[in-house]
Length: 339
Ligand code: MG
Image (cartoon, rainbow, N blue to C red):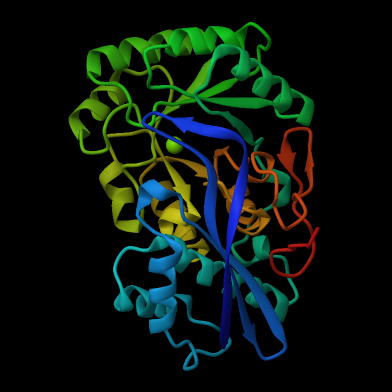
């Protein structure tokens, strides 16, 4: 197996602001694995606040040697091997995992969603995220989303203007809303009050109300909330799923946190065993990672895969999207197509 890669700056359509951070581009590493006559495509999206970079990815890639692995790939052994080389670094591990799944699909002549038994007919609607902004910019972004056909909008909150931002979006649409507080609310009482108000405004779920380390605060809001509370920052990989039980109603799984599709699927299964709801989310990503996540999305309750719609220089075609949801293609593997 031969790995090649190149850095890529993925430009964002709007400066992206969430509780605490703002940026205009995301460093991506585009990766290819060649195995026999097959090429698998993967990517690592390295949003700065999670600590990975082109440099950490390059150092990691220089340490690994996949030549002892052959098809049929034993993904558990490969993930174990990668974790043994270095802890953390889930995005670059995801890039390798995604490329290997692309190859598995191509060798077995099936789309990646079939590898995990996902049914395209069960694909949920995808939400479109509005980063924190001035009200007039929020309106413009919301209008963009409506023009693109999105049926659910997601609003980033956690600032002092929360109600103003929700009212602004509500002034032009009655669509269901998701809210992501990104750990921004400071006390559990305030958080719960806001969640109750949001529920009265047609918000159907809230992500990560309080600091990921404040288990009691998040648990208090979950126990009293009329709508699902979803862990995001608090849940990265498989061992974190069990920790969410009782403290949240569900978990947001992202390939760039889980280390790829194989572990994301294990996380979905674990969440189901524990009665947790499942959301599939993304970072700013090209179509490669979005297609990989979309292949698992029919196994989830909520889908937040808007990456390709929030960037301006995606090197791949936007996945087929109709009436607010992705239509999975029958192409073998991920089905990436260059623009
Ligand atoms: Mg989130």
